[in-house]
Length: 177
Image (cartoon, rainbow, N blue to C red):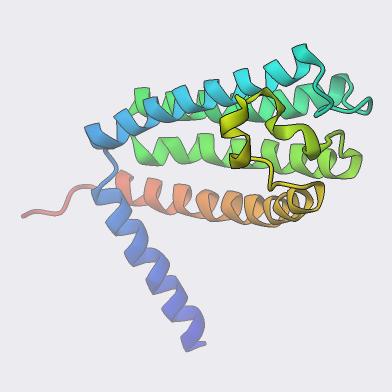
């Protein structure tokens, strides 16, 4: 019983602290814009793989896989942009929850189909930079995907709980100083 009470107290204290710093600072908003730029570069990188037929995307990379792969990348970009524009952390949690659900489904499906050959991952880089990605094998990618399948639903649940708790805190009348 005391463990449940202490967990509730931790969640309540954490929600109260998060509510006090709900406004996203300027530096973090700039970080979201940087994240958008990096996300777009990642999309361009994989589009280069697809248009050059490097072999990274195998014949199993069909329409659904294309939608899930690029959709999850684009969802992350849009989510970061919206958080930067809206400027509220708690509202951003809604984007994080829906993104995590979509990404979890995408990763799970792409893990099952695995339409990739990571031996070709570095092929669109200039030869002097290929060492940066050549170490990533299919097995390493599968391990990372399993971690993603486990972690993203947990993050969705965590963000959902905190969205509700922080929203409750934000709806309370302000305490007199």
